[in-house]
Image 1 (spheres, rainbow, N blue to C red):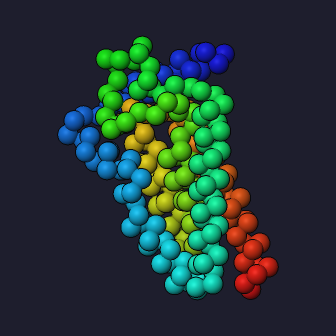
Image 2: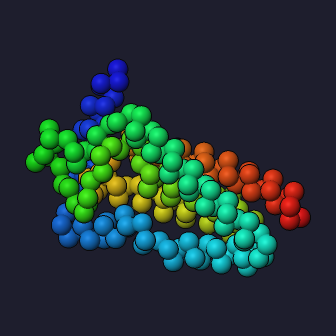
Length: 188
């Protein structure tokens, strides 16, 4: 059963990865770069400050840092625990896939880009929903695009992405609840 699921995952990866073309590679490399979305994070921090004030912003900076650290470290635990090689490391896939990324890590289950972007999307979307009710949908779409970029550049299978997104949503929700508790206890 697991072998069949992994086979389907590989086939879907090959299909999705081969949808790319050299004319789009630069865009997807830009999207997959961790530094690309610093302006988005800055805007979200500004909106938090604008609507919730300095005290809340300072508290949330620490909570967000803890959330990203948490998702990164859990992702690494899973990668080291499952030790599923990334598609760009599979010699069986050589010649079948487009490898566009500048580097290829060792293990890929599950995607840190997916989990971090989804955690940030859920956290910020829930936090700011009373001011911008559609923001969460924009952020979820952004997270999905970041996640897909990992397939496009050849470094993650679709299941890596799905599990990363699911874990990120869970982490974003848990840390949103944590910040609500801490704000109520220490700021309100």
